[in-house]
Length: 412
Image (tube, rainbow, N blue to C red; front, side, top):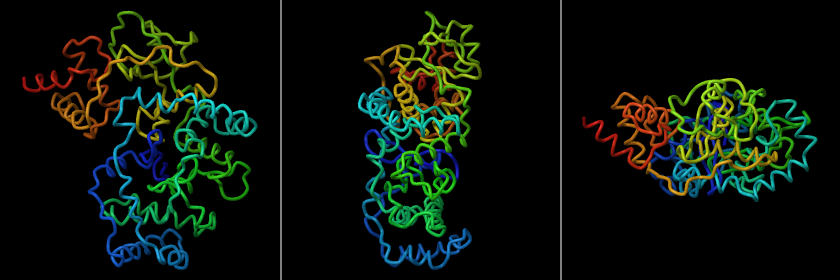
């Protein structure tokens, strides 16, 4: 799902579906204490009533507010959904194979043909490739088949009540009331996931207010039943998040034999001078690039442009962003991976990843968040450690013996 307060993400759904809110929301949800099935009705309504001054400050009338909370009860199914994030708890290769499936590719290509006229106009308007637009739609709701059936107002009220230590859900609850106040949508249209993400692009209410657009320019954006509005809204969000129409999201590359892995960050031209070439044989683009080896030097290799990090605004997970990017390529007819995923890979637990981050910080190599999730900051720190101790290849990947070696280094 997407929050309008910041174009960043957090999770919410089935084995191949993932959402967004803010970069720290996933940690907040996973750290949350188990919520009771049902709190006292009086306490719940007292809390909702306490939000009235904030709602009024955002232009919500007393009538709209009272109608929204009248008879509202907690949704006991909402807390049950808080759990692990598949995009962080599985091997990227396993997640990728499910997300970039032949069925999803075929479905995306069919929708590309069915909505060619609208897609062409949206691409011209926002500069985001049609494959990326369709892939985001497919990743977020399986092209509308998995958008959720919860009353968003009730879900957000429940989450806000149980997470009073943080304003995210309270703000989203009030944003839902703003939608009702402005007459954009009737209450029965605010249907979505248990976390409040709505429609095919899984926008949170604040994101709907900020990013949802009507393709035709008439009426409220319909991100449930109007594919053109869904695609235009995704395009608007990504462009507003910094998408550069002059760049691809990245390029799958082939590394030369005995590549030194001296750095993971350089310009595309610098990598080309090191002997790195595009797997499709075309010239590399221009601009800054990051070398990404999601399964180590023995698997697929990518040079990521700035646009890749824009995709992470939808969900701050490399599994998600890389799957979305490659799904978009496949929908547009480009070939599959040049190099297969290795048969043997190491999957560290969340606890082990957290220990690795802390040990790297102890060695003055890691300056990121201690969250047990490996992102670019973790890869950079691992790469620095590999260079420092003379490991080869220094690919920034957490190999099986990394934790043992870090413990030994920290002890010294």
